[in-house]
Length: 469
Ligand code: MG
Image: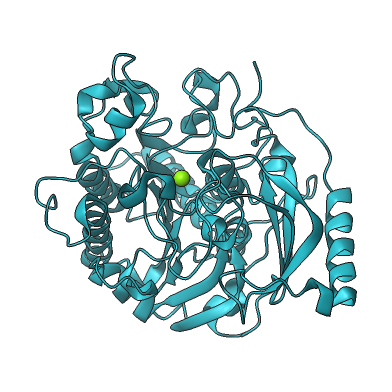
């Protein structure tokens, strides 16, 4: 007599369970290959602070290798010249003026700010999550520290980091200059969060880069089986500068160099983790800075290299940043001198992840995939609009930049002044914006004024989140 091990009912239940698992798996993967993305974003690091961009002193072998094996962009712009609006532009693919993430009274969000990235905005994380991505942010957020604005409310499954800049929440009794020039952890009360909970206060800043890196490596290991998006937004080299003991005093460039060399170590650890997990051929790594160097802090601020200007203004040094795209067998190695922007990251990742952009809003980004893959040499982006808070201060098309305003080289916190006549620069021939050629090319000036006017017509005023009292 045959023994029936499984009843008909249990076999049917088993079949149903297998079917459900297969269905779920098909739903998750839908047969389309989706690459991983790691977006490394440094804070206030200048155009001239990496070996591959010409720094003669700071050693960045890991970042230099990314540039050698991937694409190094030399005309790449952030969406704004300070932290909050720059980050809003990066994560939404929209100029900050469209989301209200710029301010006239306040240039960035502060710990007591009531505003933040509106819930109607769709971040890269939220967009990729719809396609089954696991999403994490490790590092600085700075798009709203009230509970309703935290990363976990904006598409991120996981958050480990500080909610705003590392120089905020200063202890009242310590003067700002002393806190920056002779920093100690206890001079600041910046919290460290895991998801929505404060796990450390004040954040111990000299081990932050190391801990961010460990978190990033753990995130990669944990999510290796599914597509993931990791946004690693370093708190440094924004002042106050803190480096781990292993790096402190090691660089010839002083503490600023120590901090950059520790970030370079971090990049090496991440690439190593990708290789160890067998993910290096299926992952794009992008390395960018959020704005130019904070030069008013002299040797504690970085270098713009050959560019004029710094954080806080919209000369090239304030907004043109190092940008490296790495992806073995996906990104064609080389130097790209075409124009690109952090505003393009969302459209590019969306294309690579087979995600459609919503049609109900204006996007300011372009899909850079054809250039990354080497299919095209010409960037889809030919122009750039330079904002200072809510003011359109300059416009670029091709090699030519027309500036309507001027301020001092260090600018921040100086006021802007409108120039009597707009100034025209050929950035290919005059990278330092030193020779105004407006008189020589009146037709070009007219064309660029028209470009600025046409652009301004697309901007619908919204409430400034930064200026909410
Ligand atoms: Mg910054």
